[in-house]
Image (cartoon, rainbow, N blue to C red; front, side, top):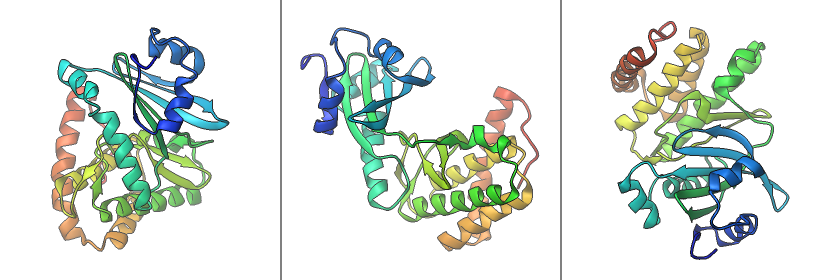
Length: 256
């Protein structure tokens, strides 16, 4: 087993996971099909839930996309490593993200283990089912606070679509930390976070008053003015709109 799997981060949890990977020669994705509750699977990744040491956990398999990525994985680098390390940095800064537990090199990719957020729904799925105006306002307020704290801490998320926000018992969490990077205030990567959030808001026909609530909450925490915030955000938003139009056609009513 040692020759097939290599622990990159989190020795104790990695060993607990390896104890369940019964056959070192078996495809990891096939093992996940049988032993996890599947959440997502595509050509390059697979995500599932399982219990490990009596804790709810989330397991993500990163498959190699290219020879370059294969080399990165072999050297213990790449998206999965960034997700693990940035997750620890964000938690240390008080940002609500899942706890990263272990990272392993496995045949064909990387395997990331983190704590699962129980009874959680991603905003993309949840939003159309929320009937309460008060709950919708609460979600927008929490989103503004969380994104502003992330940016104030000197980071950008890199993929702020609504499916990467989890709502659980009145708390919001950011997930999918593969693209998290350091970014100073005013950096276009922070502007892109806001633009990505806004694009999804338009797709889901968010009411303008609720978007204003989100925007005002974000400005209040960051201390930025609309004059400073909006120009770079609108540049990034227009780029995203054009790309979305090419792929999917028209989106919802524009908010800004």
